[in-house]
Amino acid sequence: MRHTLKALAVITLIGLPLLAEGGSDTKGKYYFKKSCKSCHAAGGVGKEVTPLIKTQAQWKAYFAAGKHNKGTEPLSKVAKPDQVKDIQTFLTAHASDSPQPMTCG
Ligand code: HEC
Image 1 (tube, rainbow, N blue to C red):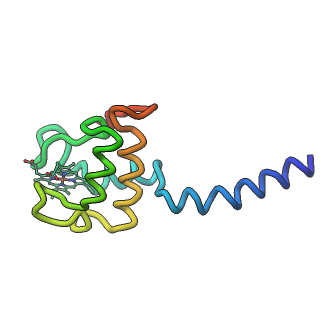
Image 2: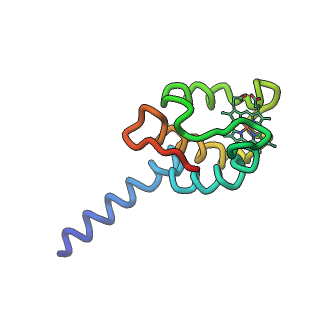
Image 3: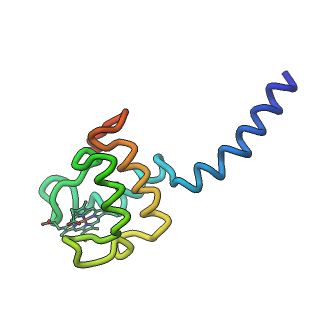
């Protein structure tokens, strides 16, 4: 039992910084709804955006470029940089070719 707890503690210590580094799927979903869906629900000012509109590679390229609204403004204009990272993690994790595609309607 004590060994199991120790092992869990070690896994947690190693695992948490890795998660932080890559952004959070759960937080990303929250921020996406909060910062993006206002314009990107069906019928919004932007076109409907869900994780499914791109593949993992396409999301990666999109966030690497960091441009929004047909390249006219930086993504950081619509969400804080740390939120953008979480949103990227969420969108990529549920992209059309991901193991868990998600519409997020
Ligand atoms: C104030 C409204 C608004 C907000 C907030 C917003 N967008 Fe947009 N977005 C737009 C508009 C307008 C377009 C251009 C739509 C078009 O192609 O006609 C766009 C386009 C896009 C596109 C299509 C490619 C492109 O860049 O033209 C993606 C992907 C996108 N937005 C993602 C996001 C994400 C992710 C967020 C949240 C971090 C977000 N948007 C927040 C208005 C918004």
